[in-house]
Length: 187
Image (cartoon, rainbow, N blue to C red; front, side):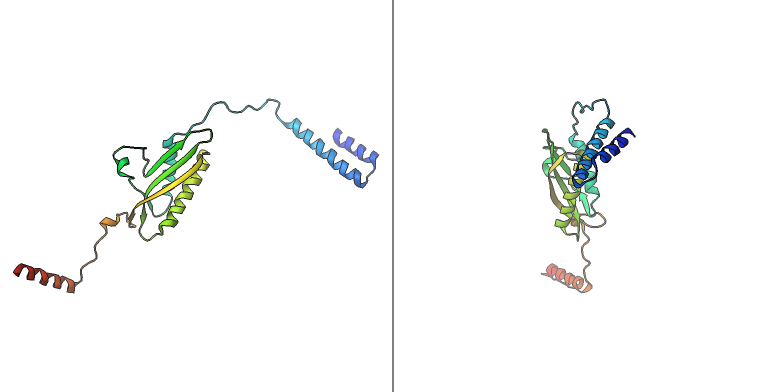
């Protein structure tokens, strides 16, 4: 209240002119900043003490959940070395490499199978973006790379391509095949 009255008195005593308006705005800004400074807490805010480190397994789990959100993608087993237990640990088709520095950086290798009929580059792009965004959002770490290794193709029901049903043999081909086999037995 007092500040407003004081401000009104100053404006009235100066008279209103073009230069006075600019001066008035400056005074108002100064008073607003003083009021904001008074509103700040009296106790100084301290920065957190200690460190927060996120384990590779947590990063692997987040990446795995992101992988599962992409339609038409299934995790694959990874390389033969990882199946035998050598090298970095796999988390359901995801391998994580963490460079633990002042600003941690993550590299993610994904091993997947893509549903037959989907365009693989598009699926890989979606997977890379989803994993990158979720890791950066949940961990705050920088994602250096998301590598996608497509190791197979599967059908909608989950069967791998190797187990695809063979096309039925036509009756005319079947009869010809039987004749050829009978000829071989006679000859």
